[in-house]
Image (cartoon, rainbow, N blue to C red; front, side, top):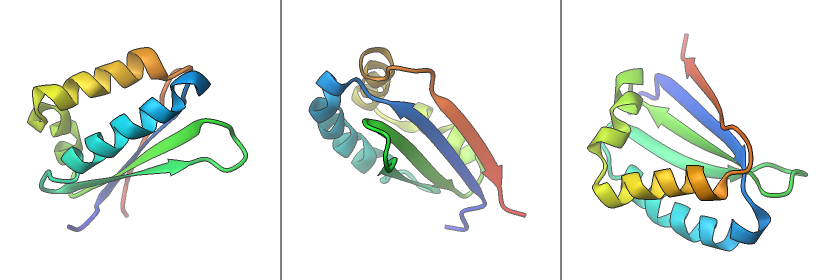
Amino acid sequence: MSEATLVTIAYKVRPEKHDQYLTLMQGLLGRINEQNGISCALYKVDDEANSYVEVYSCDSMDAYDSLEDNLDDSSRETITKIAAEFVTNRQSVTAMQRV
């Protein structure tokens, strides 16, 4: 994989949902990383309680854009659930192209 594109999604998770969030993300990351042309890792932000950043390394922006369409229904439901029930702030999304 050439990793021509990086996409980050930063957010905070509700403290009372923290353990359930990590369990859901483990399964979701496994399914995302099965996709061709994309890999994802989850990072905890130092010195910020319950703050996380998802980092997607992609062959292209098209690979990232089609990611959710290529996942199964259960994975899409997990993404929706995390955004609706677990995240406390607006997600910050940054896309970067290698130069």
